[in-house]
Image 1 (cartoon, protein in one colour):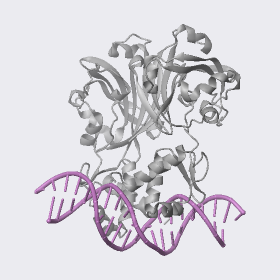
Image 2: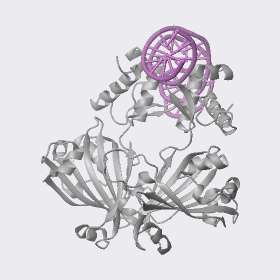
Image 3: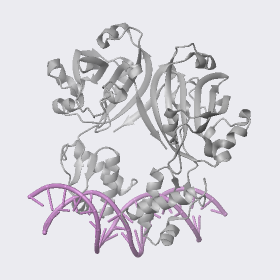
Image 4: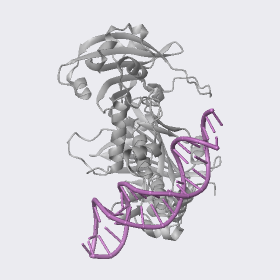
Length: 238
Length: 238
DNA sequence: CAGTGGTCTAGACCACTCC
DNA sequence: GAGTGGTCTAGACCACTGC
């Protein structure tokens, strides 16, 4: 009993989600019911749920219930840039995506390390551009471990959805819950320049993202590049 | 009684800090004592303190007590850049600062708006460079409202500390608790280039920060520029 | 050892959502 | 009105800090 009871409960909740007993978007049992089930006080269940909410696993809705989060929120790469015309109104349109490359590749040591797989194992590589108003704005290079994503290789790239994370869930049963992003700056390489309609050597913001599944395993590494002059990001500190 | 009791308590704590009754770095009364004082249950006090901790006002230390936070943490602009040699060891040295300009100015509408002061009122302008290993790396332009910072104008710039926020507290009794930062990229203007030892037109990362006092009033606006190629920032999302 | 915050209990009542 | 999460109470005991 090293860990507090509420931490153990939170971990139990995670396992029920991973095992598929609690499904994405569905309501979990009420706090009172969970308290009975685990034979703990209501306050302890609430604390455990609070942890799970902080961890991005669950979300509460006053009067309705507690629900399994459907995955990473606010993860759109476009949040780092200002491409949309200043219309004032919120434009919730999902940018289009066009895949230019989808193939099996050996994972180089850098990528393999980030994905936590053994050296020189197989992987899947995707290259695509994100398009807004028919203008390509972001270039993405994406690496996935061969398992559990091998199924994607058999699908025609034009069939892929504009959003990959729901696609991973539908096709490969992988839910992305967390990601770590590194922002830096660089210049565009020639081979990438034409896809973005920028000149070779143009300044770009570079976002390197490692995304993690429910179990905490890294399952995607992605490098996104976009016009540095359109880059814009806010941080609040305290 | 619209707000929950713990929110009211949290606000009461803030006011005791603002009023100077609870001083920076000092321990506040124990949870049990506060519960007696406000005639509420211990759990309610704990929840209120939890809010205050989230708001950056207090910090807890198990077995020791609860303390008034001494101000903004992890706010160093150098956290956005990688200038230090990769020594592996953590280098906690505070970079030197050299002030090149300190004077009274009229606040232009852009800055005035961010500081929440009426149009064309007086302000204080500081321009300084941050230096590591005798090399200037960051250029900062800082605007302050005339009150309560007027005292700074009478001090010799060489007397200023390397860190401004402790300096604001010592000299003007202003504690910075929160800040909002906007990151973007641009190119260096000629007049700034020489101070940084970069060429005019060199790519720079630009951080625009608005800093807030205990009362939530914006009290400083700052633009920091540094070599874009050394820029590096991490974000975790869930 | 005394004093602090951290965990946990068992219950009451309130506020919100949906039927 | 029934069922949910949100607030609040009044206690017990544990874990950590410092003398």
